[in-house]
Image (tube, rainbow, N blue to C red; front, top):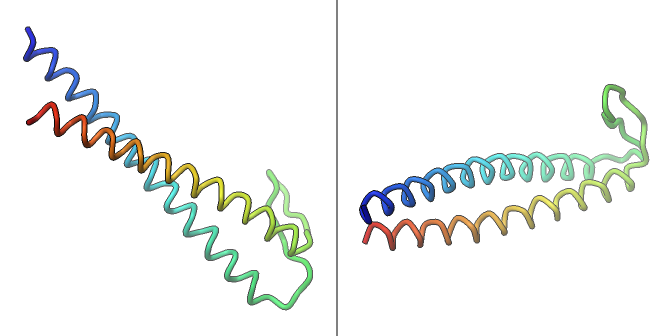
Length: 99
């Protein structure tokens, strides 16, 4: 009975780890996209840029867009750090159950 419980726990940890890795990958893509947009805005010599808001495109001040992007970047970075901590914890738990 103990082995069955360990196996179930191991499978739960592995599923959680898989979900964490998927979320982490999605956030890494978002982070890379934000970095690229920020680089493009830095190259721009204009004061305004187009931004998609819902189903419409609006003109917005570049400095405002940069601020929004920086805030989003920091949020994504923080979420990534939390996921990495959770990933390490899950890997440790899996190793302990296997070993």
